[in-house]
Image (cartoon, rainbow, N blue to C red):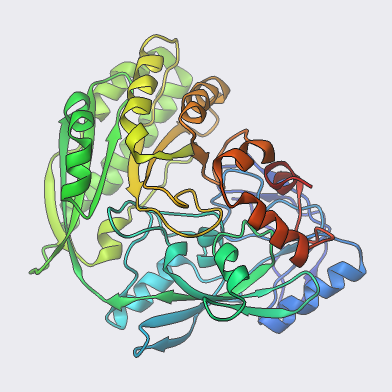
Length: 446
């Protein structure tokens, strides 16, 4: 991601520096950037933007593939809003500044003998960026990172600092846990935590037919189940994570480097680069890639099991489907790839989540399965993503808010029963659309 100007505590920077997201597919040129060092300084920045007639957006590490954080107004950099405010061992919660990267939070919690219950498969994002877009992992009973929020603090369009929880401003809390940056700027989040525990990960290959025919059983029998299907093959890699009494048995340093860095990043990067230059070789490369990773079992603390390094840059589309529709949709996707000229170098990722009660969560009100497709950065993606989206929308799919999609407010009204609840709250908290941009206009309406 390109570097832009950085400011000292609470200062504003000259505008016209180009911001780019992690994947490089979104750019914007804000009038100015601000790096507040406190919630009060952030509120001042919002009030100043209002005086100047400018819109405001906050950007974390740029890991969204949509333009959800792009702005032509004031860009808030939360890099000084980091760290843990407090740990409450009676309520088993941690309150953390919004700009804190998940990686720093996970490491700090582990030092305190604590952990989040579930998390996604990368941890580069800020806590506010991850929760605001609905970042999730996989889980039979444990839901997204946002579902673990117990309270949050945000600056509203009029510069007020608002605290939200099930008992304080509960109607805002019901929506703002996944607020898309449309309701205000999140300044702090309180998460539920628990004593750190061990997970045993069991990774092994399985055929496409076996994993799809046994999908319901694999979901039911494991706390966390996911798998990757390699297009142009019948091969899948599966991963089952379950709590363990121990003892810890981490991946060895050498074997971990070989599998997680050399093969999954280094060799895969070369394969993707070759496939981009010579697309006809992709099916052959896929057959090799799908057999490169061997079966392994290891036991470690949660963030070392749930997350993996992702250094190969890509574009991603992900849809959340009713869990009972996942296998049919995946089989349709496989058939589509096989009968088309598409050449797909990245595996397709499948995960699950229980229903939750957040208004615009992709798992709101229904048991969910996620199907995510990826293409190497710089590869033409419209043909593949359009074909995928056609399948997913036919099953009532809900796209991830931070990943590539073409849906609009009219579609979301149909697939989110509480969509009107969210937009009504937005009308109340931000009637002038201080936190708006083109993406929010498309997905929420105006």
